[in-house]
Image (cartoon, rainbow, N blue to C red):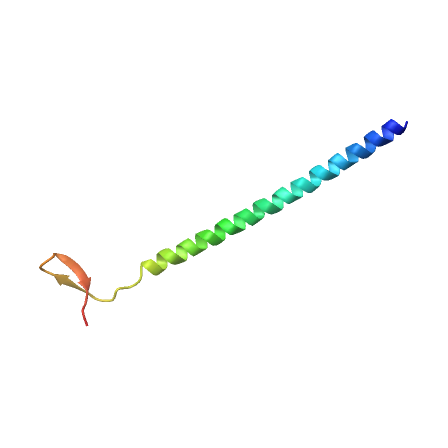
Length: 71
């Protein structure tokens, strides 16, 4: 009978440990998703800052390109 109680306690401990590990993994996955979304938001902000408005453009006949109008 004492072996049965030890086996029951070991099983309960294993079950509790598995549930704790599952909750911990869910928390880590949520944190990773949050960090990925934040990184994507920062990358989008950097891309939009790089694509800034250059103002009026004028055609440069020598090069055949449009350039920002010189003040």
